[in-house]
Image 1 (cartoon, rainbow, N blue to C red):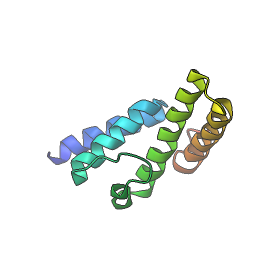
Image 2 (image 1 turned 60 degrees about the vertical axis):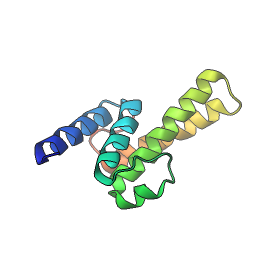
Image 3 (image 1 turned 90 degrees about the horizontal axis):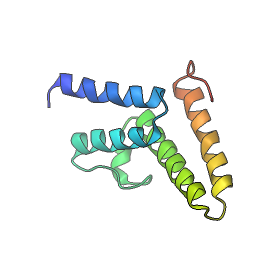
Image 4 (image 1 turned 135 degrees about the vertical axis):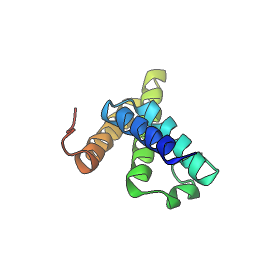
Length: 105
């Protein structure tokens, strides 16, 4: 991949993040990390994440947790509502830290 390909992938990631397309964000991060290091993260504690910039790591962990919490809530699993609210708070904290003009929803 050349420099322009990387720019396009990072732009797609930023657009998905700004537009709060959380499943797309998780997928984009997995794709970028996989291309960069030959191994996409398989979970929030995957060692490959230690090689990534802090914003990528925090974004992956935050949005993956949010998507999983939403799935649990939809399925009606115990604590689904509580997990979704906690994950939503983490999403707001992520945006306040990394995208201060994006604010919370």
